[in-house]
Image (cartoon, rainbow, N blue to C red; front, side):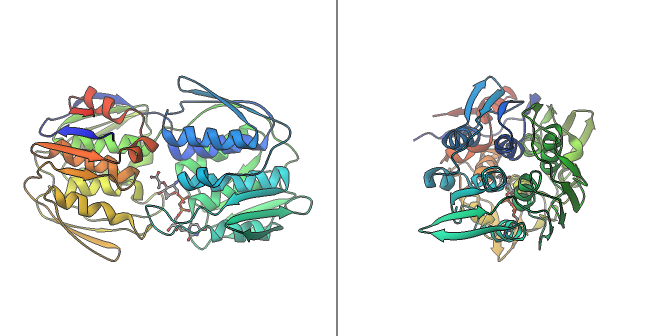
Length: 416
Ligand code: EPU
């Protein structure tokens, strides 16, 4: 079994670059289903989820090829609209294939993904939206079968919460629907903005991305295009916390600091010196961070995918922090692992109270999800002695060469 072995106590220094955002590239790969032809995506990280998505698309008939950080996808005129359970179970983002398959083929068979490491994660808002657009669904032995008579119809869909996945899925269907679709209370994440830009490059008519009201005028056909994926704000933010937790000095390049405003503000409150410019940010960490409270919220609030990394930092802060998790019911599962390293954290329902300790001590721990895994490695960078992080496949889902990049900043870290 592969583990990440970290010896704590080194201050990280230097410059590290980030790649395209996992949560943008996965949906932009799916968007290629909307147009036959040769598509090219660049700035694509070599991570497990991208490989899984390429495998899923190949089941639909798409031929994907990677060359460095460039991905070419050849989409056929006829698609096989059937997703296999083993892939959907491994990667929930598979569900965003529903929208384009319904729009292009008029049919989709996608197994219900079920819950995952972060909780129940239903998809009811996606389905309600498609039903309003004229699709019908039945659940047959765990497989969701969706059908549309003729073409999807544009309509107004009001989301009960600005769900990233529901906004994306509906956008991916609406671009080829008949007439206008209006998504009210849409998600405003930078990855949504990037997806809208990608779709517009393909010929879609979309306005309002980045606001809570997105308007999409359906068109008859879209084109295959070439495009570079927006930088990964979570990868950038994770290295920012690596600087903070080690009292180091790290510059992150290839990122968009504007996409991390709230997270950088909280790092500054914790005592970090934060500088930023066009495409880069620099974080200098204090000897010991200060306690900070935060609550996770949809963009532009504090991102839930930066929550475990920030809690790792606050576990060694001077003072007590209160964290509220508003997105996921099982996001705190990693807290027990941090406690094995000496962190003093109590959780109740969606809140955690973190009483900062002076030192963590290295221990064997298990990653419980992508961000929890990244955070346990960060805790290991600060801890005395050796930390061994198991279940690293979680980390590999979302970070290309996490270990190599941290080592390049001076961390004593290796895979074993
Ligand atoms: N929700 C429903 N019903 C729905 C859809 C969502 O109840 O039909 C609930 C969810 O259960 C959750 C909340 O709404 O409590 C928000 O979920 P959302 O749909 O916004 O999340 P997602 O699209 O499933 C994406 C990212 C997550 C990220 C969230 C929030 C991808 C592949 N995943 O998930 O990323 O945490 O948005 O920003 O884009 C990660 O990268 O580690 C990760 C988990």
